[in-house]
Image 1: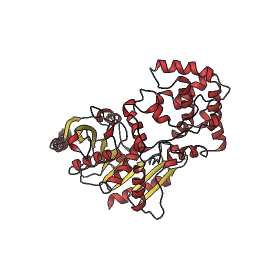
Image 2: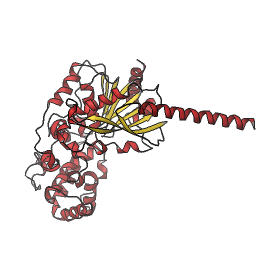
Image 3: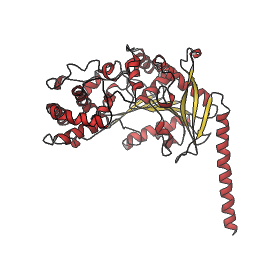
Image 4: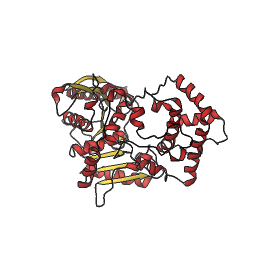
Length: 428
């Protein structure tokens, strides 16, 4: 009986401590003037979790122009723990999931400040004005969030992001070098043009000669069967309610041109390519699994990304030479503007100053940054520049790794080096 009473007492203490902790964080958040709509979320990995809205200026240099609210998810481990700021490049709905756990926070037992990027999902200003969707404004968004929450979390701060989120990490550090203690951008490109040719060159050399030949032969086979492929594509698009600004034969062309990039990007084994003697449906289904037409549709959900790519972030082009005989299009040049930009964006002129700003920042300083890349990921063709003599800027390329390269799936020796460095920085 005494044992049962003792256990019940301990449980009550634990419960009271949890409630106290919950109310303490909630009270701290409530006391912040520019945070609104604090909502509690369930989590399988964090003691407490909230989604909040932080008021941001449309233009940080001209705050009188108005404001919008940016969605931020806060996952709490402890006030004495490090804090990971996730500089998401897109929408943040997936972070609301109770099962969500950011990799670095798991590895170092850290809090998470997950920031949905401006102009995506619930962080989209109304009315929509593309003028204020700039890299500079996104960096100032993150700086504003950091200065808002740093009195709550006073330990080490780490910024991290994946892909476009990794680009955002680099942008943030180049504008505010001292906001965080160190950064870990994953698979983050640094493009210098709207159609950066380095990815095309990369795709001519990646993998083995046999793998590249098998991929190209598949692409050619689809184009040779265009007459039988088009009805399948039309039916598929009709079922999915996909519409386009270009005719269906051109849609098929772009699916084929995108195929090699997408296959390597996501690490699909070349062995999964069906035999060229397969029926139309089998070949078509494989094409759609790898590079479906939804990417080129008018209803593409990430129009904001394409605006950013056309303005500052850059993108990639397509090598049409091997397929010229079978393509409907005469050239793919300018396809981003022609197919993927929303009409409301108008004419956009690419500005390379962001590329030069980040390049110069990494060249002239030595920020504590660990860059993670996949060896066969086409985005690694435009990886951040590697400069001799740097101590803190460190690069790791996962052998045969794709866009899914992470610390946790690195080879053991690389993972050990990365974690040793992270732990050393945390202890400084």
